[in-house]
Image 1: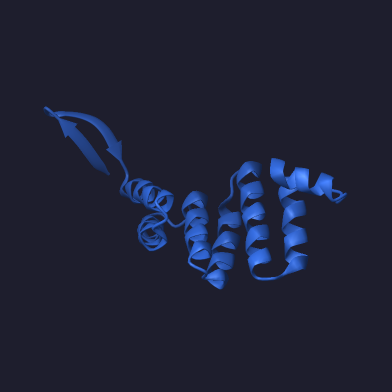
Image 2: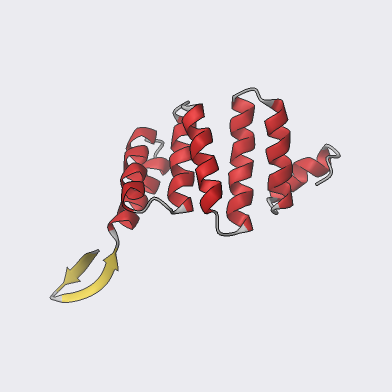
Length: 133
């Protein structure tokens, strides 16, 4: 833990993995995928079982065109997903990745899965195209 101290008063303590993840989010928002990836790698080295870190590392890989690594990392994130919102978002991004990889069957599978887990855009797409979910 790193404690922030001001006038000898500790007012916040933030774990190192969280600090790396926050920096990773900042780099990600700026479109600096390599720097974001380095930060998420550091966070995962400290705490490898956090879905959000895995999800963001997958997104970095995807934006860098490293599709096999993104696929593996999204699937790892699914293993750590604690709720249906996380599962829905991961499946939706897996559908986008499958589209980039020209795998129409996987696009369909992941859109339906995302819709079943409550992803609003996936549900809308399923309704528009008459796909039961």
